[in-house]
Image (cartoon, rainbow, N blue to C red):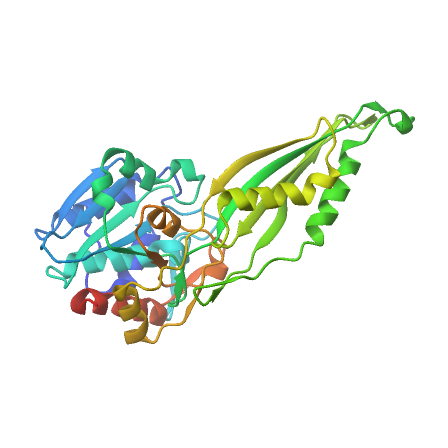
Length: 359
């Protein structure tokens, strides 16, 4: 098995991008990472399914968790990796092979960090939450995820993105009555009824709450519609799936109630509203000394995380967590995603400095 590059995090990222690792197909990259980590005598390494947890055990007073997912969205004619000067193109280059490369390089090269470190390489982040590798680790060995603070290497373009918004989806199914399209007055068109709900969503004025100095921007969007029976039948059922991104000053229950209240005036007997997916938000948690040191010593921009990430997993378990990684999140999952060498190296040096000097 060919060893991965060392001493050059850009070359290492390129090698990792070349390893296709779509969700549920992370076995190859995890096996390579496992071989690299088990070669380090200063680490203890555990593998649970396709998840790897490598830890230092130096008896330091504080423990930092560095986390990153090894999976990517499906390839979109953007593999193998392509390097053009100081830019690396390829599936996962932004989200988040650069963050994984930083973790691996630090794990291999720093035998005696100032804080104990847990490196968590986990599977299936890009799919439904129930498949997330962190849940698999927690079910078998929750002790492996313990720490005082966590940093996830999600792409932030080298800024610190604090906390995250929650996300939920509801499926709204509207009732109708079938009739012949030549005599539509004898029925009730369920698809036409969707118009009233779509109008509410289109006119929605999002909240922009400020939490711990970070401004979040909520969103409410229709993401799927469906209905219809035949070309000559008035449809008796139609549905719309609504996605709501909500700030961490609201509980999941409050966010769900907010969506239900908005559409309630449209609903009649026979209509249903089903919560199909829910991931909680995370408060920024900016008061931890390690986060403060990282921000101040590197003059980092601090902003709210508008998307959802696994910082919520750690925050829900009492571990303050933030997102900090290389790559532009606005181009994640696109065919043209790329990673800039300078951004990668700057992010690497900031995390390295934190591990070397602590808080």
